[in-house]
Image (cartoon, rainbow over all chains, first blue to last red; front, side, top):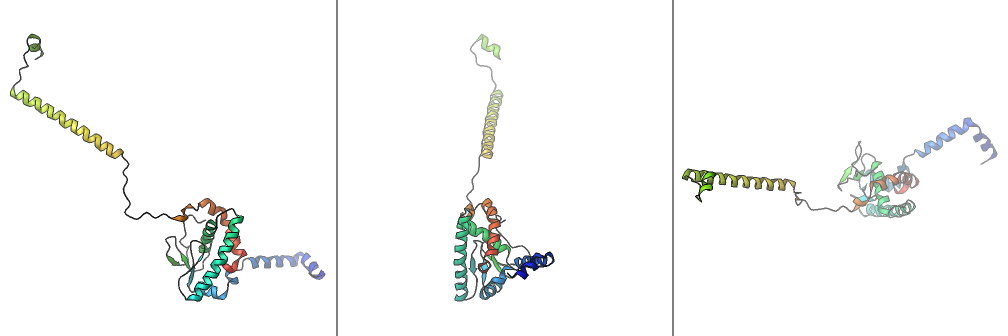
Length: 133
Length: 89
């Protein structure tokens, strides 16, 4: 950071819009960071969010399955790490994550209902396990 | 009728009709007893816990042991997790 920039940020009139930009950055939807192939598989309903916190493959070929497997392996590693830090089991953490992931599916995306069936997310709230927060 | 017993061991004079009525009384008593027993049995039945076998197979859901309190405790962390790892969710 240059000396000029530091002086500019110290000035409140300029720092305020900068803070607003930083806040706006936080509210950028998560799908902006998704791999395009993953984003496409989600929006086309080839993969869906399962109740156990992992991706399920509904359609598509081996490439979709490979993509889902790759993400599920990453998710499992992430859940294992997070669960340990929260003194929870991997299954508990994954299930809670699944609740949240089903909640934030976009209309048109697939998710698994508590009875195990695949549902397409509509405009309303998704069908979730009664234990979900 | 009791006075006759005081004087002699004579069975009380009972006419055929009286015997019949006596029998009727006894049968009435029997009927009452039977009714009371039936009622007792019925009451007993109502008091019993009836266990019916379910017509559907018993499904043991394995993730039922994930308690809601745990899920609520983890809820905030999973939200942060999504924000921290947007590429895998």
